[in-house]
Length: 267
Ligand SMILES: [Mg+2]
Image 1: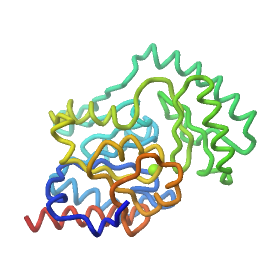
Image 2: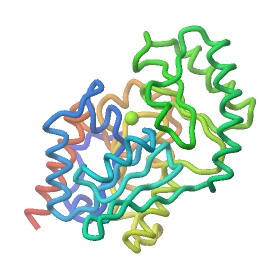
Image 3: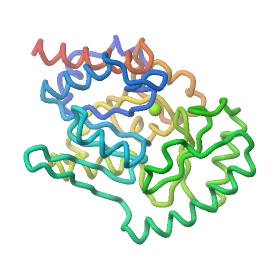
């Protein structure tokens, strides 16, 4: 992980697509700051394709796709993407699994939920669970006193003994059934919405994130960036980002946006 300040201008100038995690990447300590939102808006106005790629629920993503200065949003760690067509005033939903598959998975996740809450004291259902369509989010840090690494591992192990996938974000353990992740759905969204072929377009994409659920994205791109708080998770990461910002969270995101915009303006 090299300091982002060492990145060369040629690499920055190739970027056309900005994919970004939300929690603790765009947001800072649970809040969306004016500076981070301005960075998103400036990138969008400058013509970058801007797409948050998050573990957050469908309910939030409906709002984000509709109201934020973004082109689309991937949510629930890749369970879907939403794209709002402003001209047609139409929200486009693309889900990985069918309605029937999602219904069956929901019942299986309910069993896991009961086991986690009874076996890991201090864990809780994430407060945004009611707005999710495909995954189960267990809070270990957002609205509960932080759990230990051992407890986080126990939550992951419960998901895995049910053959579910489990990923650790900075605040939740998210688990689901289905062979998808942030990367697989980002690829589908870029192809469907912008006609971008992954293999030929990957040099024009930057991904910025902060935690282990971002790993598939860090591993997929030559240009991946961690905001400075990624250091706290470094021991959990097999795929690390190529670069790290000097600033934490939303300020780190704004740092990256400024470099991208300056490189474009200088071109
Ligand atoms: Mg995050």
